Amino acid sequence: MKITLASAIQLMHEGAWGSLATHSTQVAGYPFATILPFTLDEQHCPIFLLSDLAEHTKNLFTDSRSSLLIHSSIGQNVLTAERISIIGDVMPIIPSGDLIARYLRYHPDAKDYLALGGFSFHQLTPQRSRYVGGFGQMGWIENEEWASLEVLPVADERMLIHGIANTYPNPLRILGIDCYGFDVEKNGKRTRQRFADAPVAVSQVGEVVRRFLAAIE
Image 1 (cartoon, rainbow, N blue to C red):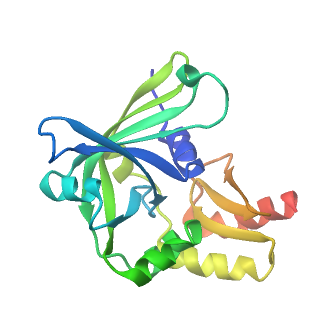
Image 2 (cartoon, rainbow, N blue to C red):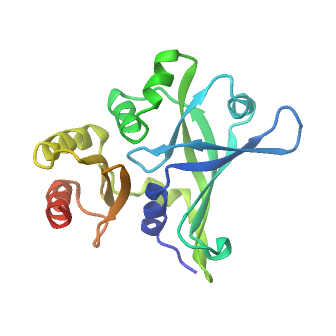
């Protein structure tokens, strides 16, 4: 079945954490799975803030090949729940100030880890992904599809968020905006607002977000 990347993007933005499987250095030949928070960058690639001392980080320095599982928390039957397994390489990156700011909007507590030192940012670059939308709704997403996505640069996102925040103050907080939707936190609850006609052109994203916010106030 042909799967649209827009549906997978929606799920990925709804998740605050995922299960990352790396290649164990302690037990050669076996996978090592752990749970950790992530944020998506402007190309919807998962970004992690990893401790240099963590077991999964040590594994990644030896072998970057990994798999990240993100799944929906909605519903009781795990076999019919929406999920995506992203297969790719996790590599260290030097993030821009805007990308760091984006990560901290989603995970404010990470500011304390950055202050401690010994933590670094890593990016998962997808090679191939398996998306399951429900019973009988599944398929593969190729890495070429990620490369063809409509992208809102993080610098433009920052300016949009700043302008919108002046119109819609607390308790409404914009976490992130992209061409497929935006993430908002209100009264401590995070939600994803998906654009009906995604992807939206970069020049139109701000206006679409403002219309959504005016409707949900």
